Image (tube, chains in turn brown, cyan):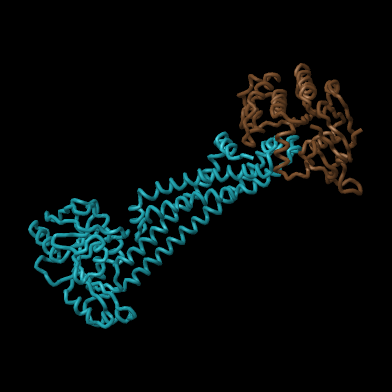
Length: 222
Length: 400
């Protein structure tokens, strides 16, 4: 499923000189095609994560719209947008993203449980196996290292079978072997399953699997 | 979003938090249920006493005033061993405004094999009585016969059973409803039966102030004033006409008890209100602290597709469930403190104390649990609002 961002921008309140706001993301139009990996690079604070949040339905834009297929994400009421995000958009955030009261496997199945759906147990087991965390399935997040937590978040996003996958610094906590493994999984997920993958990263290795590379600077996509 | 199962799991997996929240609501419901049951029992006791006395004025010998307080007589079942001439009944009936006059004769409290408490035998005239007879007639249409007795609820003898008083067999033909007062330990019989019991006591060498041969003495006359007549004027007329007799207005006695009851009610209500204010403030603070602690967790859920409304519902469900748990625990604890010790409470309060019926108690318990649950949910509302607005992007990067 194709995602299109049309003239999407985002400002935040901040007193800077004469203005009371600043552009975290200047108006940008871009398309995320199914079956392709888009990699966005740029310096810290350039607005990469804000753009990812805008595209993934987590942060409403100040102007512009984001379409998933024919659906304008931000025209939907919160409940409908949330359901759509749960079904079609996978997000691997930059920070720690685990619910500590649940085991690794339960964390991975959580998106389905939120809506009382049959949890994708086979998918979850398969992705845990592929990402090398199968032995941690009953462990609690507090017992995991940063790299293991990151792989748990990746397994969770993939198990839900999203149409578009967003990953914010997905290899930040990973060693070389796991970085290569994760990037290969992303590539295969996009190419073999015809999904759109959008990666925000500083990692030059990630650029190697990109079908398209974008760079961002001071809120502007170059 | 289907949040109920998740809410239940959240409560189970954070037992410390769940117990702490439930304990707060348990204190709430303990105060509400316990306090309300005590106040209701006092009110119900007073109503029962009022309707059981059934008389507007009670005539007693003047000497009775110095022996015992009338309040104690009716509330504690204190012995009323004083006597006057039976002609008082007829004289009272001649006073304008008096509709009915019913004599009663008290036999001092005695210990019977049946009971853990002392019982007081009271002789009544079934032809004239209007205070006990209406209650007896519910189970006994023809009134009390020879060696037949009607017993208060604290006299441990059932209908048809034989109660031995001074080795005489008395058949229980009526059991009276509880009043929460000393009247619950009374045994009523007709005057003939009373005399036979006195004979039996004399045979055993037990002397009462009254003898079996004393046919024309009584302890009190219960007066019913005609509709429309001024009770105060009738009371004055009776006092003026009858020498060495004191006329006691039951309304003033009831009012005295009612004033004491109002005092107890006020104290209990104030305590309940204090506990409520404290508990609600603490609950609000706890929920706000929890909302900070759980911001990360809710940001993750939001990231995974949880709606704002669904997250709010989840917090409200959790807090309401804590309320139900705490409410049930507090109510059960209050029940354990009150019901097994109602006799002790009655004794300590020195006021008519009659527990409400099972239906009322059940409704009250249910209402308390619902209230605790609603209060807990209301206290959780702010946290729910705050948590449902968590911005997952900034929360997961360290801020909220």
